[in-house]
Amino acid sequence: MKIIVAGTGYVGLVHAAVCSEYGHEVYAYDNDVDKLKAFESAEPREIERYVNEPGLSSIIRETHGKYLFFSSEIEPILEGADAVFFCLPTPPNLDGSTNLSVYFDAAATIAITAARRKDRRRLLFVNKSTVPIGTARSLEEMVRGCEVSNFGVASNPEFLAEGSAVSQARRPDRVVVGCDHDEDFKILRRVYSQFLNHVRIKYIETTPETAEAIKYVANTMLLTYISFWNGVGAKIGEKIPNVRIDDLRLGVTADERISTWGSFVSNGAGGSCFGKDIASLIYQLRRVNVNTKMLEASYEVNEYQKVYLVERAVNEAGFDFNRKTVALLGLAFKGRTNDMRDASSIKVVETLLSKGVSTIKCYDPMANETARRVFDPSKNILFEKVKYYDGALKTIEGSDALFISTDWDEFRGLSATVEKTVSPPYLIIDGRRMIPDFEELVSKGYTYLAVGSMVMKP
Ligand SMILES: NC(=O)c1ccc[n+]([C@@H]2O[C@H](COP(=O)([O-])OP(=O)(O)OC[C@H]3O[C@@H](n4cnc5c(N)ncnc54)[C@H](O)[C@@H]3O)[C@@H](O)[C@H]2O)c1
Image 1 (cartoon, helix red, strand yellow):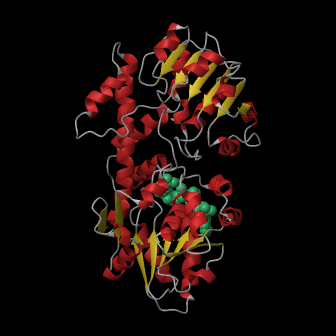
Image 2 (cartoon, protein in one colour):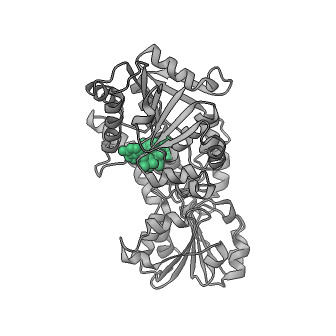
Image 3 (cartoon, rainbow, N blue to C red):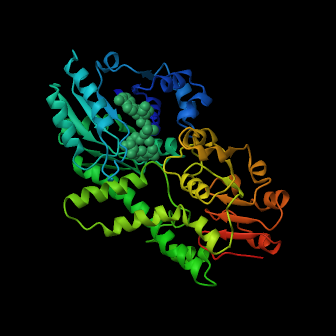
């Protein structure tokens, strides 16, 4: 199949690479020329500056120039194409609704170009972005308005989780395809032939609206489950003496009807999707007069989790952040990615700055470079207080308190590093419960404050 992938971000680049690996002829199209140059170089460091996913750069090195091509021009690549996958940004507006302006601008450019094609082959416009229910229908009207002949529209939402996007694209849990016509289902069956009649992968064919709804319900269900543990489980462990959160989790999730994923309490779930998708579903449901209290609560618990540990440090551990140096370990919204969109660390930095800290010493195994853009001093002079280090040891050195915000494996068991580097009194704020032997530290005079447990003082 000849496939165009419009938008080479986390979703588009992975989709393009994995489709090329399966032998399709793939043209990845983007309007960011610098990004495309980096991908064309096939240099891991260059690719990872934009999309850092395990295994991705080696596929690009293997297939670039044979099955995978990059272009910032749509016209030369559209002739003879079977499908165009839209993997474009759909950010939130201030009221929670989804901003579709970039999406429809890019789609219109492609549709206008498609109307000038010489070939009469059916061209399928496939949406992979997360878009409000009913968008495929609007896309169809827009493409028809551009007088494109012989086209179809499909909804094919993306479910990848950053950090394991390549392995999930190679072997997804499910492929969801929403179309109105048999011939369009057939095109996507050919694109995804490796996933058909698979013993483990669910291949679901449905209406475009159902496919769009599946994506929203899946994401809001996941965030609601995380918020349940953070809003109920963690709070029981923090407020009621002698409750051990880890045992609570084990006991509850021993029931096979209750998932383990999402039951690990934390200082909130970030990423480009959870927050904006739940806000968008709330907006969509309010418009049809559905009560959205449950979704609002999930959203609010998650936002509260991102900041409340700093407040607990003040109120429960009696720590005064004014003029203190805080070491912040972990900036990415989760381990194994350099993505900081909606990361808890952003809220942590803002809250610490509002408490008057003198310096925030940061380290993340992948996201230091991303953080320099996020905490740009030209946007906010206070970001000059944010400094970057290479490694946990150098970051902790000379600090008055430590905040762990991301679940990187290398932060597990930091106690030896803490003992070697800083002396008590010293406060450790653990947003991911990364230090299992905290009792040892407390016995040596350190104060330990973790999500899900009462503050532990020497
Ligand atoms: N990142 C995830 O984990 C994830 C998972 C599932 C679904 N999604 C959804 O997929 C969509 C894309 O997400 P993403 O994280 O890949 O976004 P992204 O911001 O990483 O990538 C979007 C890409 O589109 C390009 N682009 C913007 N305007 C363009 C234009 N006019 N023409 C061509 N290219 C253009 C950008 O340069 C960028 O490379 C969103 O709707 C998102 O909600 C994301």
